[in-house]
Image 1 (cartoon, protein in one colour):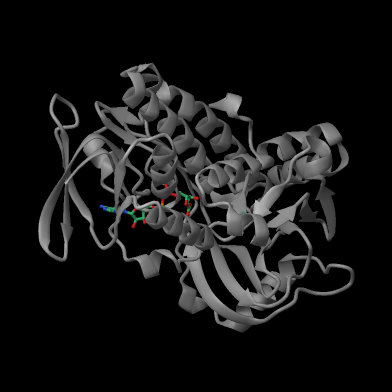
Image 2 (cartoon, protein in one colour):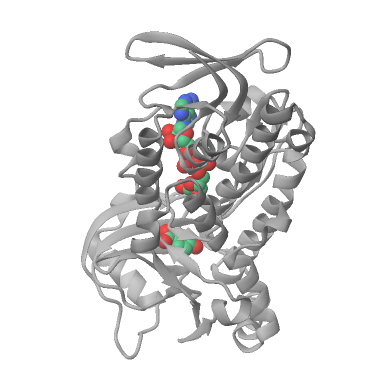
Length: 392
Ligand code: APR
Ligand code: PHB
């Protein structure tokens, strides 16, 4: 097989990149280790910035998103027993859209197949070769028929944090990273929403977050120990913990329902030193991880591939390499803004096991400031709805 751009991974980054390239006349093949059914059913993120919605629409995957995504003009911060609204729309003129990532993946996959673009499931990539010199780069992968090779001009690693592209890039210096002394326990519950907007709760027992998926399905999270296990949390214990951490809404406690899924999400900040070597590029979670508190992971992946798609298209149009050479620098500028925001939101809202009484007062003072000063709230709102495209 031969193509212009070999893309590893059919997550949001890889699929959106393939679609944006196709719109600009560049052919690509996406190789994905997992099966379609698994990808289309794994519950993950859910908050889309307006810029991400714009890109997805441009990529031909905006129809269901526009009709079924929920527009939220604000979020709430809960602490000290009460709730405080951050009016995103009044502060920035923009709103966010809540739409499940696996629904988005269904839309991107359907758009890709409809356009007749290359997309191969159940085909793990095993090695990358010749991306640093002349001649075609080679992507080795395995499918039901055995070992195969995809030849291409460029390779893009959109293969997530545990993928192989970052290893193949072979960084000389260690990445920038930070581990947090807690994780998130996530559940999917069959219940109506308890509130009309997302609630981020800071409580002495730990952080909690109420998000949503549909009028009958809610996505809830609470801070747990980093080495916690799903088995240690029977349903009743989960609801008791959530009820304790989230203050009642209009006198009504959290609305419970059957818990359909439980998972534990690690919390880390991570940035690769470089997103390029030769004709190999990294995008999305392969290049950087943010803790989920700022809801930035999926949006950063989309912003990376927006830059990369136009840089690759420029190269195939007239041979210009300037934008490709500038990709790492431009993408990393936005990445670091989001890294800082996600780290800051995490510190603002979580119970750190080693926090001194003084540090807990500092946290409380900052929450009070954010909920009383429009200037402070605007800093949160601007980052939450996403920085403009002039940020890379
Ligand atoms: N060969 C082929 N595919 C691979 C390989 C491999 N060797 N290794 C990993 N993959 C695939 C995974 O199976 C997965 O489908 O790459 C894909 C990576 O997708 P994501 O992990 O979703 O990463 P990305 O597309 O960068 O999306 C980032 O999605 O869920 C969020 O937190 C995430 O918000 C972030 C965003
Ligand atoms: C989600 O809906 O899954 C979600 C929402 C907000 C976050 C993280 C995850 O900060």
